[in-house]
Length: 271
Image (cartoon, rainbow, N blue to C red; front, side, top):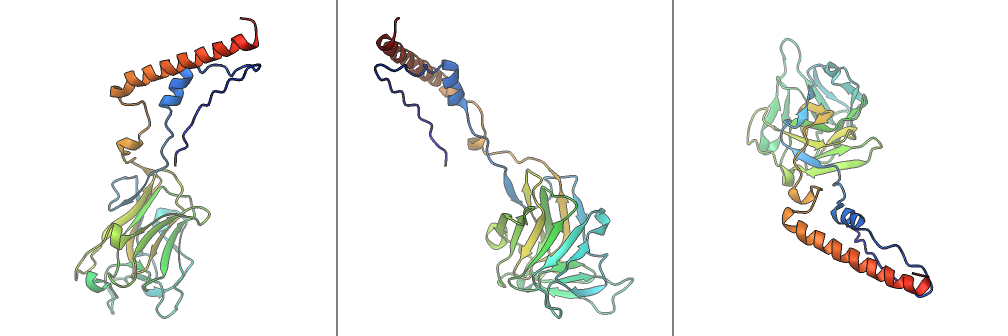
């Protein structure tokens, strides 16, 4: 909520009045507009990520590894990125699944209900529950944009994507069912990209929660292409159509203030 600034002039006989407001000062107050806060955007592609870096899970141990971590991932990036989860069931908790080389004797599968199935030779990291989460923490440095090629099981909990800051504070969180649903009916290895873009280096971790959310590739960037701000939030001068009126208002207020101050001086001192 913006605070409205009011100038109250109060003249009392026997006291020196406040100096009259100057015309430049009034115009500065008139044209001053606070800068908008950093923008945050839920995105369905990485086009706004400058020089993006991506990693998958093909380099993880072959087969299904049920783990809550911490487990190092993304070695191909040369950075320290850590996978964690709160789903620590050793027989069916959060899972990192990678193909065996050169061939897999037992095909791997990850069911997504109406959204089909992920299966060999795909690799993935999955929540593997209706309400738990998996998280990717960027220990080599915070990022300004991060997302995943991902999917979830509609109707099995609420799928959410969230970004957290350096102190573990929530920065952004989106319900994907309502904000940006993914629909891949009966597809094999289907999905879509969902991510969060901010204009500052303040994202420490990406979290996917609920609905058996699963990610195949994580993409991040430390530089973004700014999204255009809505015209109503762009700071700057008033529209040209109102400049003449604004100038006239400022001049009238300046003259009125000056006359009041001069009248008060006749009461407190020699002219």
